[in-house]
Image 1 (cartoon, one colour):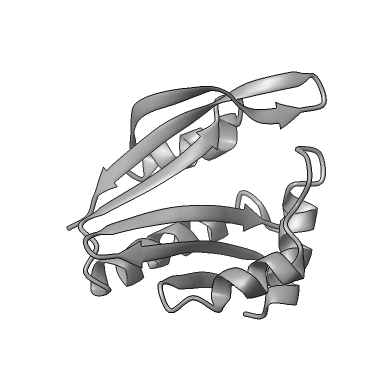
Image 2 (cartoon, helix red, strand yellow):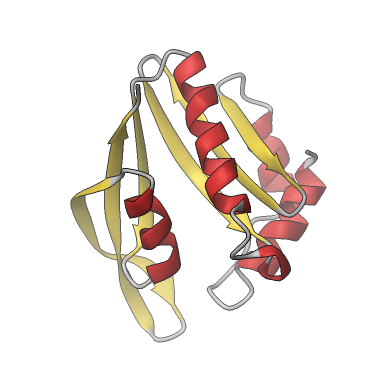
Length: 137
């Protein structure tokens, strides 16, 4: 999957929630040997694994392909790749009001471990971020 494909999918998925990431930003991340992705042009997960920890940086599903299991599949493949790279835990942060993403993470075995107050800037002000974690294996 190319940086341009990621940026296009991300733009569609996050059209209503703020500034999507650019192809240049994705390309910069993908230049790192620690960063990897799973999925396709309709849904993908992007993150990094260093030592025994992985971080999910973003996950996106094109709205035209939501509710088909593509996001869950991309997340599961991301976790498998993270484990193959030696990670035993995955961390992520998610906007506290993003109910569909929180449901995906809860259903995939993540648990809330903390909260960052006012972390995300929104059109209505600020929104908290939930910190979530999952043990792999």
